[in-house]
Length: 566
Image (cartoon, rainbow, N blue to C red; front, side, top):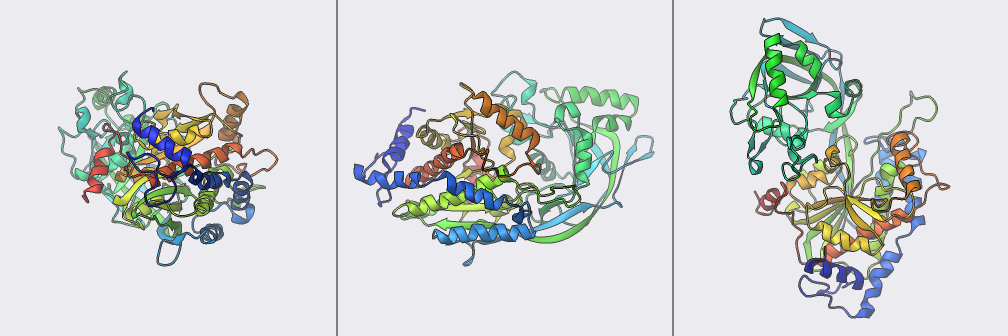
């Protein structure tokens, strides 16, 4: 990234360009004398392994009960974060408080829920929920009905003009249930420029498909489930549907359909007659090609969704460091404080402590508060620290913040997200999910090089990690956002470090074993991470330039619309 902007950012990082009204400015180069470089380095030197470890030790302790939204563990967590923000002089963001209320409902599938498919012969076939079909709703209502709605197959259910793609061009779906295959057409071609090849794109996400279907008047969205194609066994999906989950307590969110769900391919095929089954299979196999044509199926879906609903108020924790010269423009750091709580029915240890996921990211946020406080004055732009709730429930705290920002979202110049930092020692790599999608990469590349790291792309973009953490709701609205995690370099992998990553994912991730252990945790890599996040955000806050999405990014038009107030 040896560009004029990369050289400018590197000079800001190396020399500080600190905190005067002029500072380091786009096109001007560093203006501060060499002796003024020390304060930035002093702030970096104050990022200490023992401080971060102490925060993790507290947040991931049994006393915090797995930090579940709405629990006693939440009360302890938000109090701890708020006290740290106050200690380092952050401005409370919400009417004199650090707490932004996030209205949630806890939802549990009730036994009264029913569903049925009616075929061309007029015979209604009862479907067991969730064994034969999984259904849910973004609505917080306890009961949602769907009456005898025609099912239409629309392939991927995508409209992407830049790729000449419109699965709805030849069909009217008003009042109907659309059936879609998962993902997007990219993997069907050996072409990295077509829907980004094997990488999952915005168009392939279920929320985007539901939004597209709703805009065209559909009342339901069913995703065709195939164990091989989805990667999650149907049994696991069905079991998960019975567990309580949380969602935002609102009926005025983004457009969506009344009912969303999934149905296994074998179950759908069993409901079709032989001729329809053959025609559908041909259409399914052609869904990734330009010749695909949507068509109605000889099926009608009825469903009566019953749920036990309990209202909960959770909280984001938000602190502000006001900028010196452009306080409205701001850089946002995000890290989710929540985890999955406790299971008192589990024999032995029933607390899911969430040490790596995401006490580490929350600890990084707290260490950043201290690092910014150590500077002799604020940067040009404001810095906003947001500890979000209910990420594990579907990015709910981040979604709420995006809809109810404490500062206008159009003035947010970039988002840096921190989710699960790994205590496996120093490393040479920094994996950036969706590397190359915005010029935030340039700032982070310069920061990473100060600790001997290089940036690398996500090695498995087909799993859609970009859409699974708290930066995504911001990106979806158009704010440039970056999500990066330190780890082994693909060019020179450390076998022992790789083994620790694999062991964590296989045995500790979202398990009771995700605990802090002073005897085995090596915090040096996390110190590198926090240093990179700090230098990246500080360089952006000192710059006049507004980071942009690349011209080919689907988020660029959203950014322009956000800036224009549309």
